[in-house]
Image (cartoon, rainbow, N blue to C red; front, side):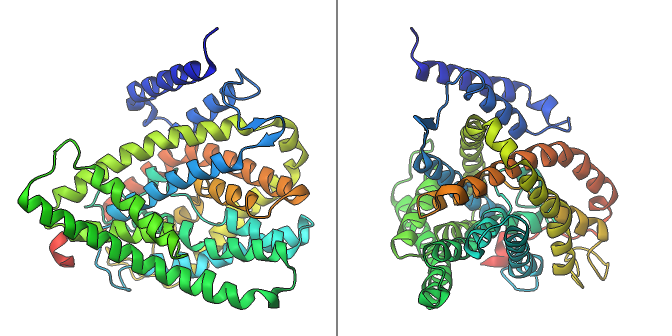
Length: 432
């Protein structure tokens, strides 16, 4: 009898071979790699071969899901930071500020209202649902993000920077929901939430991202002058920056996701040789893609038909409102009077605003927050309700966004992106 683990390795290896060799065809189709991984995950789960099981004896392994998704997200947000080569000036990052400061709270509050008024949730449960589903995903949104360090496209920049930041800045609201579940008297914990979970955690995340990344780069440069590192091992510096930044930030109760994104920005600007961060980006993206396969396989394997049907109407309500009303209207409000950086137009093109509103992809980040909530007080009927709404929303996002990404981005490139006023790409020297 062949060990199940060996069969798992065989199937994953076969899957990687097929998607790699077929990538030239897949990228031309209205189809994403995540859809393929999801279908294979379902095939490997309880409705198929039963080779991947996060549930054993009705016990769900939330800790394993949390750790895997955590690793994927920190690598992905670092990759987002590495992609962005823009001056660190407020005017240049105006689209990001709008999407984080205005859009994300609008999304969380709107989803919380839906949960409270239509889904029978308490305010704590409703806010937690909003915090889990509001952030867009940096992992599954790679096809609509910046393609390289010379890409100055406003749509791609907005989606990349939003994906890199909102997975971190949704955390205060996750904590808010967890605190509210534990104690419905907000006055008992609100001040601590404000000072520790909001102000301190965000501020320390930014500072640690700068300090740790800058320190590692300086140490590396000094040592490399004396004796160069092995070329085969050199790209592992990026992984060390990710892990050290994240772990040290978490040790001081800061937001590690935020620190890692900031670290990516710092690393991009810390090397005088532009090929260095580019090589790190290529390596990190390869690791990210490999981990994405495993995460979406896990998602497919934990899906169960009966619970999905039990919460189908609630999930459908959330999906329709989130995808077609809350996100698009929130983007439209957030980008009022927004002037693009690379165009002579006075305001952001309506087509660009519509696409930002549509590409609110949900994925690995939401899975992480859900697993985190499981391990920090979310249980019982509320846990089942929030979990299956979240799973269903992610699955629908993987499918509808995966199918629509290729044709919509081709339409965008053909009608808007190629008509922008030409501007020379930013260089690393601008940031020194």
